[in-house]
Length: 501
Image (cartoon, rainbow, N blue to C red; front, side, top):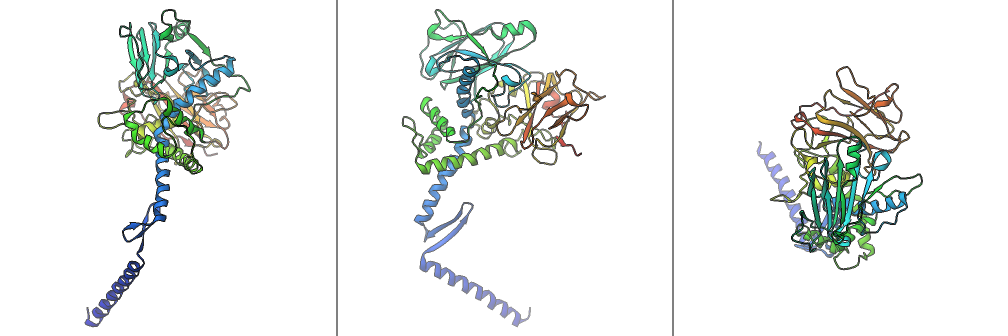
């Protein structure tokens, strides 16, 4: 480099350095500097944050914590909405006067019967009871011999007892409640007062029908002379107001969180979350009377938290859920998100998995995540088409299911609306197709093509589920008795494809 050019370059660099020093001197003179961050610019005087920026960050802190509280509460909110929905719907459809301390089972069947429950399955009937042990005291569950399978869940959808076809008595006991030590049966200690217990009577015909109502449930206080167990069939009528177990998207969400906080004991794993709730107006032993600012923060956080929950639930990644994606490009994901229903593992408690599943579905059991071939069930969800676009009700799509799906018992495909995660409502009054569908059309190799859209493809009506213009939807493929080809993912699954006219 010629000497003259080197001198010029040195002079240029010196000039830049001098300008920077001059700017620094100005900043030091005023004492004000700014730092760019992902939440915006933060202002300092020397090394001290300014009052204005501190106030700004206080607000961001509450907004961020409230947003995470939405995802934290997601599974608990399922049961906080489910319990009053069960009471309200049975009262509306049957005209019954049901009290909070009544023990009863609801019978839910078919398209209209299972509609209020998130991602319910239309092909198998549900028998559901939900008790608040703080109102009833301990409850006795008397199981008859026979193929009855189900679960007892606590208020966080955690299984506390699996019902696996064994006869015997269970005693459901709430936190701190007394019970006879010589009880002739198994003690099921719940860490929450709200419990859900539901089952399915497997099999067909009159034997299964009789078995469905053979279970007995009553308060321990009535054990000497137990009343006849109530089984109430849910039969909604036109015009009935239907209560849903979908999480609300207004202040009712936080009111239900407060209801839970006031009723239930504090779990050790949740103590920091309770500290966050306290800063937002929800504190155990005190009325929930949020300020205008707290309401604004809570509602804004609910919008973002619900969107985040949907992002977690419908857009699973291998980084967050290592085992959740089926194959490389199938378009299907494990709806259970690789969740262990116990939630509390030796080194941590699951959070992402709980929020993901809680956003879209209700109840868990060990059978739903069984890894034993031919046992339990498996759930694969698809939320976008082969091009990565949302499944829109105004379009027509096809799903190809290859020959010999890996289900020892049967498979089913159900369509749900995105807004409430409920079975899709349509004029045809059906939301699913399955290997049990009478007359289902199959291809020469035994494979099946299903169709989703506003109008049935000509000649394919039996393989079609009607969707609605302007509403997006998602699909579950259920495998009952999943076989090894599912577990090792050797059974090929392909994305749902948009049909181009």
